[in-house]
Amino acid sequence: MKLSTSGVNLMSAMDETTSSCSTDPSTPLAGHERPGYKLCSYVDRFIKTDARLIPVIKPKLGKDDLFSSFYVRCGIRRHTYTVAPGLYGIGKPDKNSEILVTANFKLTFDHLRKELSDINAWILVLDTKGINVWCAAGKGTFSTRELVKKIKDCSLEKIVDHKRVIVPQLGATGVSTRAVKNQSGFRVVYGPIRAKDIPVFLKNNRKADKKMRQVTFTLYERFILTPVEIQTVLKPALFTALILFIISGFGPDIFSFSGAWERGIVSVFALAAGIFSGAFVTPILLPFIPSREFALKGIITGSIFAIPLMTILSFAISGFTGLLALFLFSVTSSSYLAMNFTGATPFTSPSGVEKEMKRYLPVQLASLVISSGLWIYSAF
Image (cartoon, rainbow, N blue to C red; front, side, top):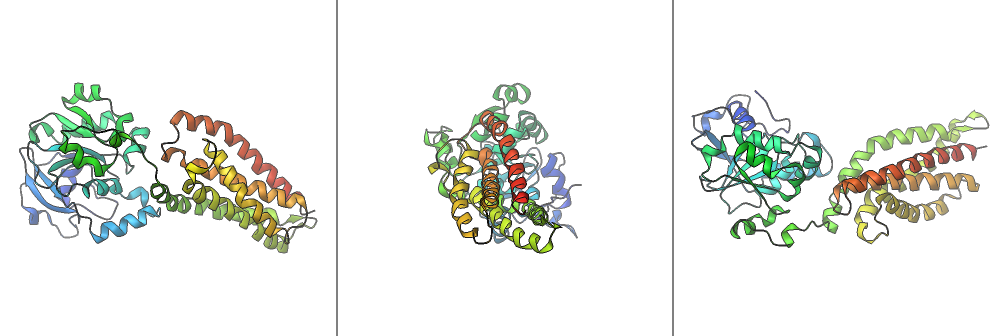
């Protein structure tokens, strides 16, 4: 028996049904409720098929879904926000209804179901280890093997009369249409990029227009990525701040606690500026910053923020060496954090990301070593 780690637990019988499609419970909805178990809030009822009972989900998001989505977008419990893999229904699905494939990251699952309020369909959830479709396709969890496995485990040939599944276009890199057809008998049809286009896509006899195939990265889409990035960097930032306070204490007296505090506070300001420019400003202004290389974009925004900061901090740090050390540290932090967005945008490719990292990581490491040396030297 398996329980979802997301806090929205399927009851004991449905754990096996939705995760592996291997059991055949025959009791009504109330019969699935057990002491100590809670039916998922998004499950409305169950329908009987030729294979087994299938949970039918609600298209409307509840308060718990909305609150959980907010936490996850802030990076809280993001890696455990999952739904059980398997087959779900929405609306009043029958043997002619389409099968929409998605990931078991609940944010992706919710984003899909809320766009299907007037659609009767089946939703086949793959086990992507709680990763969204695009990233899971790149990591190999949204894959041909997993899709074929779920098709067979859920006995789709008994549930629908047709032989096709609709896979998100962003999952295309992980799925081989030919292999799926050969191994399962089901044909893969690539759906639109955005879930909101699915109703029109289905109405147009599963045909996508040019707009449905184009990836966007709007201001809002860039903005909602920043809370996760900032939350992710907080723990490493605290560790970095501790190191800054330690090296700030080195000086003529070998180590000075007053120097560690006074100079450490100043260096933390430089770190904060680097985080703000690299993890927030750079993604927000991404299309308007020169260069296609994210590391260079981070250098540009980091410099714009570091120069006025150095002017403000000049009263606390005497000498050009100390200011140069802080400038290099802040800009390097910005450049490194900006590179974290390379895998979340349509502005680059996997090969481009690899080349950029090989080019800039050694430079960033050298810059950190130089800035640390200059910072210690400036205390003498």
